[in-house]
Length: 304
Image (tube, rainbow, N blue to C red; front, side):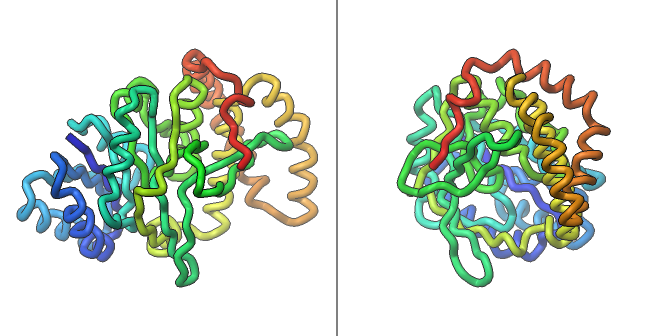
């Protein structure tokens, strides 16, 4: 069985538009769809319940209040009955038989995740994405979009990827310390890579991603998004990096702070102090995950 998990927050129009497309591309599979509503204030629940009346394999999980991406996905994953987890944002819809090649990849017991080719709608144009690369530089993991003609992958996007449920459970799912959003998919992929598993990119698995219609930019300002992203960037380093890279992060910190002050980049400064507030929890999480690691950081980063 395949379990498709769709997080939703105030996305009634996206659910109306995209859920029928998802269902139509799953007809050849034994599947369930788990929609986790994250405290929506629009008519999302009514729309979802109408779909549930038509399809018995759609289930709804309700968050009483808005909890963020990782807690919502984890709730869905804990109830999932499938061998594979398919994570799709509500602003994503599939093309062609988007699962065929990815499921074949996941039949390898050492493959944790497969990222889909993501045609991202940006300024009215489709920009092909889906494969991630990155390297450690000046104390941080600097990540970027990679070439789409290769199979290896630094991370599988939480909004358009397939995962092995058994390995997901071994890793403990998404780390909820990153809530409400960002870096949680990079984190679990990186943990999987350091634990010796594979993360792949599948160009034959195609989805369209209407980023500009997603919930994050409707609820948060650009400055809030950047602050959370910087906070989580620090969290990622201090949970996953080697001691040598932690020293590098500390060494480069004055440089980054001075540069932020001179450029009036308050998001970086606020992000750093938000990270400090969470530092005791971060160090506790570090102790847990370091026990799972088999490979060094330089063995899992991908530069192109």
